[in-house]
Each structure stands twice: as structure tokens, then as C-alpha cells.
Length: 187
Length: 89
Image (cartoon, rainbow over all chains, first blue to last red; front, side):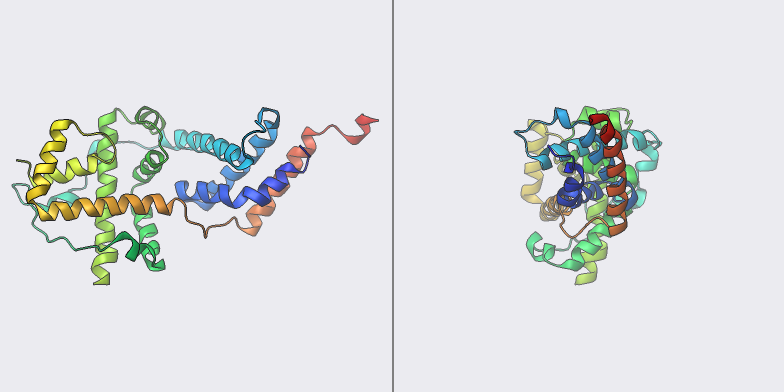
């Protein structure tokens, strides 16, 4: 390998790594730092690089580890409390005392008809950033296939049950936000 | 019979953890007769798909300043790693 590899990595894979990181941490500064740390780690561990693997795959694997470290660090800074996770306004107004719907649900149409619109993604990103931080982090981790146990450890959750509850609420919150700010506005 | 509130909670949970056979059965039964919950489930699947797509969006790139900063940092790290040229001779 030539000594120019690291700058070539930055040119070739910098954006890929940045996109990957940004989609997960939603902060330019943190994503940039993660890219830098990844490339530095790559440089330091060049001899461990398996030539059979693609450089991009290898770098993404390093980035994933850096991300886990990042979540570990910030995860323990959150104070998780099941009470603070519970949004009375979120679920309760939608159901009556017997747990039956008391609102009509809008037909959202097909995903494709929405995903093609640039404005949809603007709203979606806004809804994502409105999620409480720990919810967004947890959803990202799960979408990346990080195991239940590891998520609990990384985000300092007490048990798997708290994890499922948090994830469900994150999904519900996102649904609600899209419903209000995209679908209701659009009709 | 599950209430709609219970059914929607199960449906959301099902995205993250496998439901038991009994839970799946209860949910299926509920969805058979409840069009609003069917609608709700479709919307959850929509949200799930959108999240996955949003993680792969292509238009985000490193800024010029960030790129320059990282390049400089990499160059100095590489210089530290390499033995000085005089050491070779």
C-alpha cells in the first residue's frame, strides 16, 4: 500500500462515510469527527487490513465501531426514566376509555408516491430531529441490526422491556408527526 | 378481543421483537375486523421503510472545510508514522 492511501480514502470514501455517520448522529460536527477518527484508525491499522475485503467495507466496519463508542459515551449521559418517555398527549387522545379509536385515520397512499417528493423528506427529517435523542439513537442502532443486549448496554437501558417500549413510542411519535405535518397538510 | 390501543401497541412492538404465537393470533383477529388498525399498521410499515431509506440518502456530502481539516490531520498522522527520510540512508 502506498503512503498516499489515507488521502485517497478521504477522496474516495469520505462522503460515503460521512453520509453513513450523519444519517445516524444527525450532527455535522460529530459526523465529521467520526469520519476523521475512522480514517485515522484505518491508517493505524493498515497492517490488519485484509486485502481480500473492499476498502470501503473495511472502513465502514471501523466507522460502525466508532459509532458504537459514540453511542456508549452519549448513551450514559442520558437519564432514562420511563415516566419521561411517556407522552400523555401522544397516545391517549387517540383512544377512548375503552381503548377504541376516537380519531379517523388518513389514508397515506403508497410509500412511493410520497418518497418521490423532495418535500416529504424535509418533513421526515424534521420529524426525526424532533424525536427525543435517545429514541432516535435507539431506532438507528436497531435499523443497523445491533442486538437488544448491545443496545441496552450502549444506551444504559435497564432491560429489554424498556427498549421495546422506547422503540414503540419512537415509531408512534414519528407516525404521528408525519400524519400531522405531512399528510394532514397535504390534503 | 384486543382493544385498538392494545392492538396498535402490539403492532409497533412486532417491528422490533418477534411476537408470540398467541399475540400474533390476537393481532390478526383484531385486524380482520378493524379497518382503522389495518390502516395504522400500514402507516407504521411506511414509517419503518422511510427511516431505512433516510439512512441511505445520497445528497449529503462533507463540506470543503471539513474535508480540508481531515486531510490535514491525516497528513500529519501519516508524517508521524513514517520514519523521517534521513533515517533511511
